[in-house]
Structure formats: C-alpha cells, structure tokens
Amino acid sequence: MRRFAPIALTLALAVLAGTARADTFTVIPSSPLALPSADLPNVPGTVAVPARLSTPPAAPVQLSYGQLLGLWQSAGAAYDIPWQVLAAINKVESNFGRNMGPSSAGAIGWMQFMPSTWLRWGIDANGDGIADPWNPQDAVYSAARYLAAAGGSSDISRAVFSYNHADWYVNEVLSLSNLYAQGSGVAFSLDRLQQNLIAAQDAVAQASDRLVAARAPVRAAARVEAHWQKLAATASLLSDRLEYEKNAGIAGSRRVAAQAVVDRAAAALSSAQAALVQARQASAPASFAAGASSVLGAASFQDGWAFPVGGGPGIVSVAHTHHDYPAADIAAPAGSPVYAIAQSVVLRSWTQPDPSCGIGLTLRTFDGQTWTYCHMSYLEPTVVPGASLAAGAPVGLVGSTGDATGPHLHLQLDPSTSYPQDEAWFQSFAGVAFSWQDAPTPEVATQALRFTSSVSTSTDTVAATSAPVFAVVPSAQAGSFDLAPAAAPAGGVVYFNRPRP
Image (tube, rainbow, N blue to C red):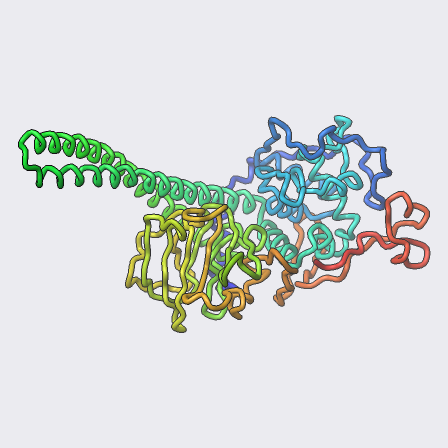
C-alpha cells in the first residue's frame, strides 16, 4: 500500500484547500417536511415513487459545489450523520450526480440505491410528493436516513458497510471522509483536480485514436503509389509508362493530403500530451493524501510492485481466470492510467495497433519475468525499446484497441504458462487497487482509520473490519417487510444483518 511522508500530506491538503473560497458556499435549508424516522423502513404502499423508477430523467438535476455542501450538511444534521461521509458516498457512488446509472447491478440515482432498498428507505425530502432517487435532495436525505438506521450515529464504519458490503468500500469512503474533514473546500478542490485529469486523459486517448485512424489512408495511398511507380519503371511502352506515372502522381497527391491530416493529428496529440503533463503535475501533490489516491487514479505500491491500472477497487476489477488462456483482463474505464508493474526495461512497444493485441508493450521486470500489455488507447512517448521504467511509471492509458470487446488492460506473462492473478504481488492489491469480479474481495489488513467529524463533536475509530450491521425491528412489524424471524433476538427481529460478500 502507498506510504507517504507527513510533509507530502500537508502539502497536498494545502494545494487542495487553497483553491476554494470560503465564501462561495450556500446552505440548502433542511426539509420543510416532517422527516420520517430512521427507526423503521417505509410501510409498503405509503411512499409515492416515480412511475418509471429505474429510468433516468431526461434532464438530470446538477448542483453547484455550494448547493452540494449545503445539502450534505443539512441532511447530515437531520439524521446525525457526518456530512463528510455523505459527501464521500455521493462522490464514490455517482461522482456528485454525474454518473447516476442504472449501474450494472441496477443501482440508481444520486446515491445509487437498489430500487427495492429505495422503496423501504427513500423519502420525499423536497416536498414535491414524490420520493425520487434521481432528485439530489431526496437521495441524499434518504442516504442519511439509511445510514442512521444502520447505527451511523454511533458507529459510522458499520453504517457504511451496510451501504456496500465490502471492506475496501468502507476504507475508500472513510478515507475520503477524513480528507474532506480537513475543510469544506477540499472536497471540491479534489473534484476539480480529478475532472481536469480525466478530461486531459480522455483528450489524449481520443487524439491518439484520431492519429491511428489518420495513418491508415497514408499507408494505403503509399501502397498504391508504389504499385504504379513499379509498373512505370518496368513499362516497355512510353504511353504505358506515362499512364502509370500519372496514376502514381494521383496516388502521391492523395498520400500528401493524407499526411497533412496525420501531421495535424500528431500536433493535436502533442498538445493533448502537454495538457496531460500539466494536469498530472497539478494533481501530484494531492495524490499522496490518503483518500485522494484512488480518486486521482494514482498508482498503488506494494513491496516494489505497482498495480498496472489506477482508479481503485471501485472501478477497477479482474476475474481469476481468462476466457481462453492464462492472462488477466483488468477492466477499467477507457482512459484510466496504466503503470509499469515494477522496475523494468522495455523490450518492445508499438503505437500502431496489432490486430490482436492493439497498442501495447512488452517489458522485463527486475525478477527476470517478461510481461505484455495489450489493448491500450495510448502509449507514452517515453516507452520505447531499451527504456528503463520505475515501478508505477506511467506507460499509457486503458483502451480497447485490437481484438477487444470493451475497455480493459490485457496483462500476460511471456510465455503465457501461468496466470498473473496467481502471483503474490498481484493478489496483494485485491481490495486496494482492484476488486475481484468472480469472488469476494478479501479484507485488507490496514491500520484503523480515525474519522473526526467537524459537524459532530464525536470521534469514531474506524477499523478495517466490521461486524455485521443490524437494527432491531419490533417483531410485530416483521411480516410487513419480509424479515427473517429466525435471526431475531428476544422481542425483535434483526434487520440489516447481512453476510459479508
């Protein structure tokens, strides 16, 4: 796991907080309605929801940073939940309302509730008569209620675990919460850094795609030109030679025109590369802060190794097996950063997509093993044969070039006789840099986090592990909510008692 010095952390927070003005925030008043208690879920049929609950609205609501802060603070105060935790969940789940789903699992809205969970815990916080997960006020207040029902007022770690039953998720949310607790401007400064970095990565990936596409007509025209030139050089008749030379000239003109397009695409890529360098430099100090690393897609390190894709276990995943031979297909959004896995030397690299592997490279790590990366959208210009790379050095961006059905990094040993996933270094990043697609992601033994709320005077120590979360519902209510009487203590039914994934 990444280790960093206190001075770097202090610098990171200074960079983050220094970009936000304290007078730019407005507070959204708490709901004018009598908010439902967190003690019991909704009685079936008593809450009106959108007719097409899982369908996103045509024009999703977007809020300013000031409005977001006011919403988190008012909802947190209403249910005694630290606003920083609500902010962190909002960031992790929907990126402040930018990616509201439905997710692959069917989660929806600003805070990514499953529809069945929304029916039990969703509320109408803005007073329009509808409990709408796509409405920010309804969603954030409902999340606060849900966390309160899970005991968030006294044990925020358990409550966050009830929201998503994964220890990596608890660690990620609470690390962000701790970072946001340094000041309200930190959340938004970090968000700006992330958005700038993502925009720069996307611009480079797109510019690289355009350059690759532009080179194809040049090669095609050059082949045609060479064909006619060869015929002209061997023609026995003057009339034939002149005709062949004429055709070669036409093809040559097309090649020159196509090359001009290539030159413009190369210049655009160079400009995008420069912007990416600036974005990386701007975000580098902040990436050392616990909680910011995953948001900024920084490399994760462990005992001399680095995981090859940045972004964290919330967006990076891999299965234990590959579809037809030993390899790892590491799924991540297009444009995600790709890193050298260890101190290594580049053996080969190619920017013109191979029909199978796409854009990629082959490197030899310090232990003598040879590794190949495939399907990248972009390769760093410094990644050339003979180049020495440090662990975690940027080598490119995730893509889907070559024979790929979606964005991912294909990683394999050469020769491909064993799975990368079986390597001890690879497995050590489970729950830190990625999550398993086909099995539970194991707990990561980390030092306990300490979360201090600036809203409440309480301080909670958050361990990396947490016991099952439960709230006791009176047994008389059990039948209405399909609960499990067998799990009930005397006088009640255990609700929220959920096994680890």
